[in-house]
Length: 362
Image (cartoon, rainbow, N blue to C red):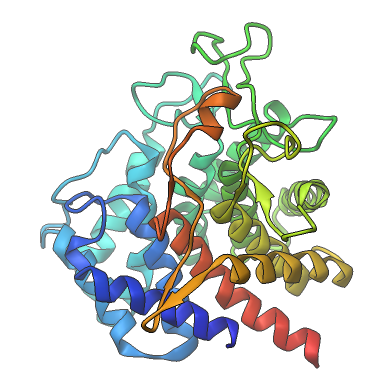
């Protein structure tokens, strides 16, 4: 079966289980649905099958009121912004004014966000001065395309500042990996009293960063002063990540650098995010073609982890959403089947791998 066919099968599996308005986290405009539907958007763009577009639109319309407000979301949590990126396509296809209004409103939220003294987004209002890696995806997937589309150079500056702060303060020099979170005030219970850093390298959070960087580079102008730096951050991170791939099964661990430590386990959502990012970085020329082998190994490992039943596909070992903690915290998190975190990452990965595999065969 081709990679794109796996992506379609996964989308169909979820569609058969949930009507669009009933996706998990029902009634909340949230990144969990947004991640999955971002993957479905890629499937729609590759196949042109209107059922995927209609499903995305139905979910959006169940959450947005015609005056441009959202039925329910937390305006002070970055997690509740990501799904707005789906509105670019809907606005293009329909010209519906309130889709654009939501986009404008959300950009306004980010411009008025709470910032650390360094200029970094607080991850949420009740977590003062805390930056979490996840937030780069939540904000960046909206800011970068908006900046490119509407000529907002200042928004490129805003998102570049987030990237720079994270890599200057959250990157470990020894491993090249990124700690899950940083509290510049050193007040959080998980924060190191000297560095403000959390203890561990959590797979999915690093995966969000990798995906964010490789996707945002589609929008950054090549003559932007920070463009080469962003390319460097991306390649440096992926060159570090591949060192921790379990080559026996192709996957990465829940706590990335501790594969041999008791209790750790290979986690599929981060593996899909890393595979996607490596594959796209190879195709775009940010990484050498020799790195395609890591992506193919990751893809094969994830495909082998699936099980199929009655024309449906099931993806295991997906970490539930999680806060910041120590090693025991991460390895003790529940593992789900077809949790939308992993499903969305899987669908995106399959769409990207379809292109990479075609190119490697040519």
